[in-house]
View 1 (cartoon, rainbow, N blue to C red):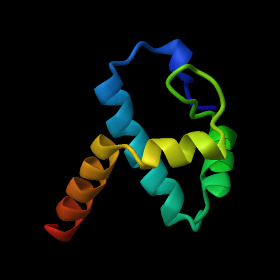
View 2 (cartoon, one colour; view 1 turned 90 degrees about the vertical axis):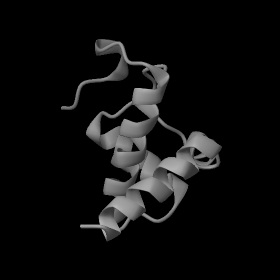
View 3 (cartoon, rainbow, N blue to C red; view 1 turned 120 degrees about the vertical axis):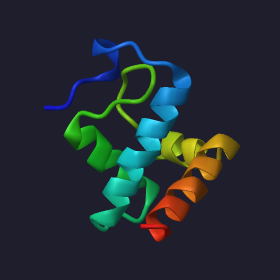
View 4 (cartoon, rainbow, N blue to C red; view 1 turned 180 degrees about the horizontal axis):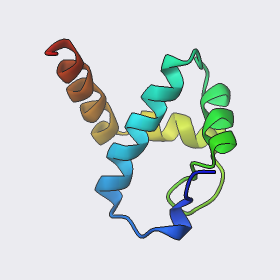
Length: 82
């Protein structure tokens, strides 16, 4: 099972980038809704910043963050450049 956030201290910026990558990976397996994404992250043991399980509302809030949107655009640009 994956390490939980409680088991490793992490800066918010590092957590955000890692979580964007995790969510993009989950989406690539076919998860399309916030519920699907939250369930997949929770099944894998990938917790939110507080070390708790994800909820659909937290996924929606996370994905609406300007920093997260910028990181998603950057990742898509990196993928196109390969």
